[in-house]
Image (cartoon, rainbow, N blue to C red; front, top):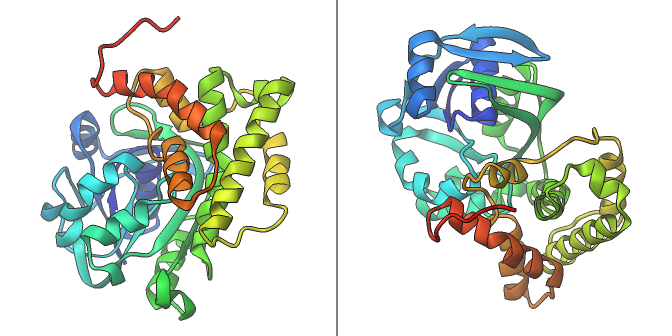
Length: 318
């Protein structure tokens, strides 16, 4: 199966490496020093699934230079989806499927606005991985787990194309499933990572601190409940016990665990603030659902985001 992966960061780079090692034909959209290192030396992966270097069939910063693919996995940051989406058309073979793997809940709609709607599925990945230097990615913790599903009227039918993609991912050592309700799977991840990221970034603390400080624990719970109310207002069928189940999962994670938005803003890099915390505030306002916790967290964190993007002067972080 020919698979194009858009974005060579922790997620995209890991998927590319694992799939190529398994014998799949992989084309990768990368850029900068990462691109040059992969071209020169191959892609190096350090993972519980193996330590190896692979050569890819094609690597470029221009999607139109890579040829067509049967599946396109979009692994750029959420805020980059809208810009990259129109450039993905040359990648689409007849009947190809495009699967977004971002944090957040709006990537599929953004892709469908720029590409044929029938080409776009929904998707979500659970993994801990990051760039470990030019041409290198590191993966820690659990086996990558991908859930995918058709959207709209196609969701009720069996998806041959997603089943084939799931088999390709499984052949590479990942867990993959075709979900009957992919919107639910996307929001299940969102209620896990978004409140955690919002509160942890504001507190400048790892999750162990959120667990142990009662005031932060209460704030985190309130943020989760706002996301749950928003999901229900949008017709997403989350389980009644989703908040408690998610908290149970979080009780077991390492005390020093952080999330990508927290790490990006902590390093004064552009983050997914507007696509996570900002999205809850914006979508809640559209749905008529109060979200005062997210409104306050977004306002408090926005100056750091604006400074990281050069929209306001950088300021001392005290």
